[in-house]
Amino acid sequence: MDIPRLQLTGITKAYPGVVANSEVSLTVMPGETHAVLGENGAGKSTLMKIIYGAIQPDAGELRLNGQLMHIRNPNDARANGINMVFQHFNLFDTMTVAENVWLGLTRNSLEQVTASILSKAAEYGLDIDPSRPVHTLSVGEMQRVEIIRALLTRPELLILDEPTSVLTPQAVEKLFVVLKKLAAEGCSILYISHKLHEIRELCNACTVLRGGKVTGVCNPKEESNASLSRMMIGSEPPQLEHRPQKPGAAVMRVKGLSLPREDQFGVDLQDIDLDIRCGEVVGIAGVSGNGQKELLYALSGEDDRAPRGSIHMGEVDVSQMHPGRRRKMGLHFVPEERLGRGAVPTLSLAHNMLLTRTESISMPRFAGGWIRVQELEAHAARIIAQFMVKANGPRALAKSLSGGNLQKFIVGREIDANPKLLIVSQPTWGVDVGAAAQIRGEILALRDAGCAVLVVSEELEELFEVCDRLHVIANGKLSPSVPIAEATIEKIGEWMSGLWDHAPHKEVSHG
Image (cartoon, rainbow, N blue to C red; front, side, top):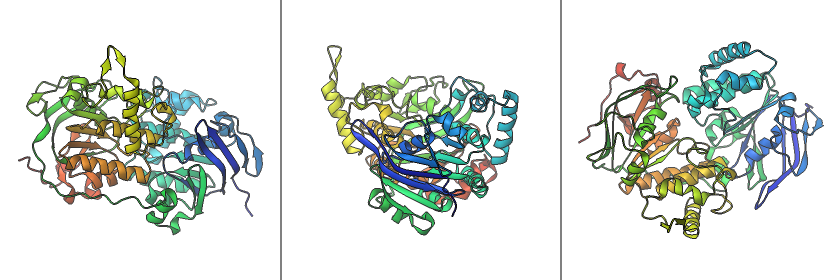
């Protein structure tokens, strides 16, 4: 029999208040693509970090190609043929793409690394400019850098944590071609994803975790989405009810918005027209890095350079208002970067409430210059309970939460503010199927209550599920809107290349 590429036995890791992994055993064969499935906080990322040497287990053993190993750190892991692409990226913002990749490939010159990046990017359709500083990249572009960096090491075991969470369907197809080729060449792949259809297509083995323990091992190709959901969360996610509804007046109206990029690697916004009306969800699809970030910053007020008269909320020109003033008018915003923009990693969940909620009448006021901490923590606790956030209470630091649980808290914080207009970027990035259904359900409930919602997502399935109509952004230009009933994945995929001008379309009237 073949010797397993990786064999874990009795892996246990505990933190104060939580056992992340409890006696986990896992076997991965050479050339096998093995899914690790579980809801947010089930212990998947902790287990992967143990394999990669980023954290040390309290108990258990790890064998690589039959040899008992003690992986002391990520350098040790890479030296033994293990590489990992994290859900939250390990990149230095102030360095270029090429310099970041070069750090892990120091035996090559920077020029050689740059040439290798260009070659891999072209081969796998992961287009990226090696000279760009990382801080100018979108989340999707950062993910491309991480994937290319991992592929350049020619790993024997490649760990991928939510690798497609911000990729388009076309890019996912290309990535799957790459991964299937790697597996055929003998590379073993550990694959974490909440997208069950991906796991069933790509993986030929699956280990399911719940509450840090292994609850099942199966061949996902022989399972359905429903049976995998039951193994993972104990039930099937609720079906969303998307009732047709006649939208009301425009809450935000964008007319002829053109805005030059703030830095040389940004995207110029060109003549953007966009209406968002109360009682509707408007979606924006597109390949990462096509102007989504620039548009969202202009709408939220983080970029207040918009020409006067180009952005209105009701009758008020908000083009050059800062975010605080827009929040007072009822605009709330969930950015795509959870840690650092959506939440301060080293602050508690309670204190992270203060980032966007100081203007809200439902929030505890400051008393004599002091924060009413008890009231603040009670409010955060209500959001934790309502949105089923797995956290060690309102005093838990933001950085201690899994990515999906932090996302639930941030989305919950903004929904709890009773916004008139909610702008959400990547609402369910890295979130498990149960939590994704919950967040999408909350978005639809807001819409049904009369809120205007703008959702920017690179996950087309999500947009088709929650939106009433859809735009596509490409090269800083926004397509006409198409009613969701008339949208197809093929049409939207074509529009992502900027081809809507060459196709017949019907614009929605804004009566």
